[in-house]
Image (cartoon, rainbow, N blue to C red):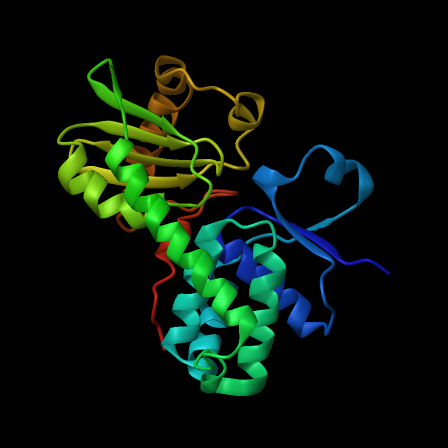
Length: 252
């Protein structure tokens, strides 16, 4: 019997899938982010979609920290951002090892799999630096709009530099490969995962900054303003929208 899972594309969603699999003692055959699940893969398998539960994700991440320490948490977080083809299964294997072996499993320098993970993370941070240096934007209705398509998920890494140094006013940064938006309107900065958004799914190949502005700016900034009274700052909660960078590197 196959075990194929799909999640919403956030780290919280992936943690929910792995918690589900670990709790039922099954090893997934595939774990796919919703934004990447299409084409031949969608035809060949019938996956189970695991709904993201923030409490389950937070508690499971904290449990990993208690068993294996902050280095393991950081390794999981960083490797998730690489968006490698084997991200889901590799993180599943790392978590299972961390629960069996405890704090020592990330320390072994002779462990080939851990070395490979660290090399991919190193390449991710290099890509983030290159992305920051080459980021180009176009002004649309007073908003700087930039469309990018990095191999890794670099927005969480460059976010502070983008908000502090690159853009001084309102901006919209759109990573179309990973269905992510980073937006600032006035003093408020909002981050969105839009993999579940039907507008994204119908326009995922859009690269024109003016079209991207029309598709997302008013819908999401207005929605954020409405929800800000009920949600804490920069944490927008609704179906399929989750701040993947809100899981901290250390929360033991």
